[in-house]
Length: 125
Length: 450
Image (cartoon, rainbow over all chains, first blue to last red; front, side, top):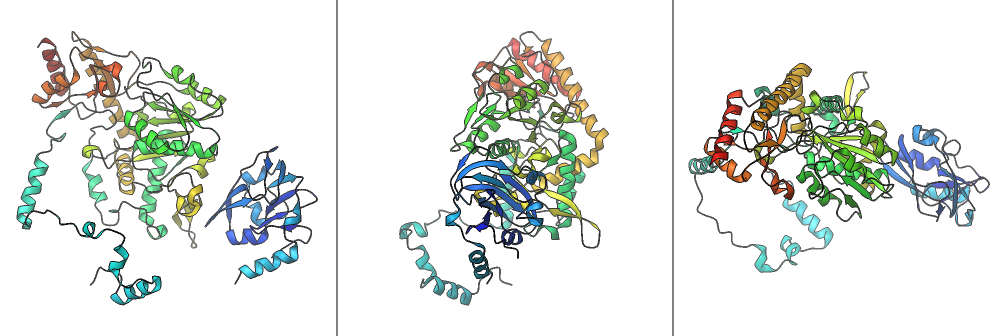
């Protein structure tokens, strides 16, 4: 399982990049969901969001899940490519699979990679 | 073999787990006097007596077999080939539900797949679900879909007053508590106007516009311009259509509809005093994730053979829970099969012939009736197999007279539209012979003299 050290993580399995403001679904989450067939971003550019609010609705062949905003701030960009190619979330969750970019986000409440790795390990039992 | 699934031992174990001593304790919150009320039942009958009694009740019903029927208004008397019932009664099909381990029932899934394919052909759309309960609930599911499509941010829906009153009532029931405004749902509105009157009701907050095709009074409009206006406002356009009419008319898909729904009863399903019927629901591929209901797809199995699956189920309520478009994914499996068999038996040519017979016979009837003194057609808009007639007397009075001659007259529109007092909606199908139509005309004339 891939957990990049430069990112921050939420308890609901989102990653957040403090340098770019991008956020998405972790490798752990995409693996749990299996093949993702549909993504709908529930936010619009310019919208002010609070951390923990629904950001995207994700459907896989066996499950449906909601992705939540990892931080509070202002939505600056949305990854339009996901609507047509939701499978990117499976193949490249930390790269091309970014969902939205949030400006002015404070990552201090999030876990670092080490902590998130332990958090995932705890749940896999 | 016992049909009680739990042994006393298992039951005791379950009671012990939840900390209850015996079964009776589970009911202790219900006042004792209400627990086992005395049922006032007559003495038991033998099978022979019961059969005679039930036959007596059945005889009290009058059916279209003993009458000549000109009654439509949403349910139509068509010929049903005998082979349909024969196939429906096969044990493999005789269950109303898509099984919850669906892929084991390849035959059921294939039947639904064929049904879906035919419905998309008829409506001119890209996708069909496995069906809903009836036309009314299919309309309501269109509203659910539009609501979900705009994530609840558009709160106005426009429905034409010339959509079947029962569909509008069901829509009101389904949407109560959703914070929606229904515009156009006013039977006192001007009913002479065409789609232009609906156009004026659309605004930027409108999620969905619903019209009927042909409308409740039988009128045919080309909704292309209306569809453009709906799309210009960013809203979705839903047409509820009569499937028989679609055999010869321009499809709603060609007019630009986003959702086409309707009552599937005319497709080989008996009138049966109002149900069970079949709601068909078709839409464009881009809305598939917001569509309610089950969906069967075609695939290949691990040996490369053609196979059928329930697909995109994650959007359904048993997985997506409260975020699903609808809390209903039941379909009318058996009746969807009936309509698939009906369409297969008739084929494109046969089905077209049914529609043409309906059209020509209805136009013959309309022409004859409009020649009668005191009667005239209410609208001069083109119609399919149903038309509205202004009568010289109350419809109930005329119908009572027709009934004496073994004729079920048309629908009394005054019941639903105060302005249409003494207006009768007459439906003519391939089942009505020329002699029957002539008899209807003769008696209508007779009544006007009385």
